[in-house]
Image (cartoon, rainbow, N blue to C red; front, top):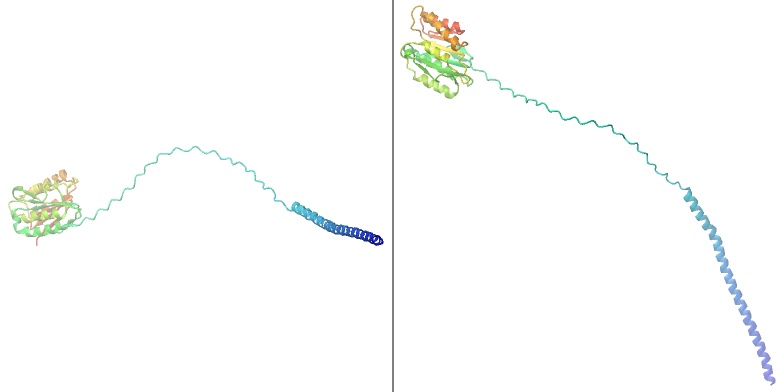
Length: 293
């Protein structure tokens, strides 16, 4: 019994010590926990106290900066002044254009006419006729006539027109171109020279018919001859018949070819016939040529 009673006070004391230690440990743990919480809370409070002013300052600065930044001025569009257009004039009705005639092309200048030469008598006339005595008295002289006539015809230019009239026996006439003046083309010249080669002199002289036929000739434009070359070796005239002959030829000229010029050629004429030929040329403004060599 004594033993159990000894053990119980010890157990009680030990139990009381354990409870005290437990209480102390609990108190200590609580205090430690409180300390840790206090430290943690203090740290957060300190952070809050430190960060809050900073946060406030940053926001404040941003707001001030934003407010202080110069904002662009509003763009003011200028008020457009309405442009008043002047009244447009009524369109003028188109005026008819005057037709301006096109300038006429200048006509080519006519080519100069070759000088026509026949037994020394020359002319630049454009329309020429040769009247040649083909009577029997010319038989021995025809070679000379052919030579001079050939040279004269070949020198005619294409701008000239001509004819050859031979006065044959009994007033018969032989013409290179019947009743007309032909352009002096190579073909026309050949026709005239062909006629010249066929002439055989015979019969008596009948000059008046030959000269009248020459004055009636016309070219394509109905123009008469400008110059007549009249060649003969003489007339079958007696006494004062020479003056009558000149008068009749002058009358024919006035009626048929008032402006024609007669160049006369006497081949070995006698004095009386030479005077008639000279008078005939002088009356018409022509020239008399005498062949004695």
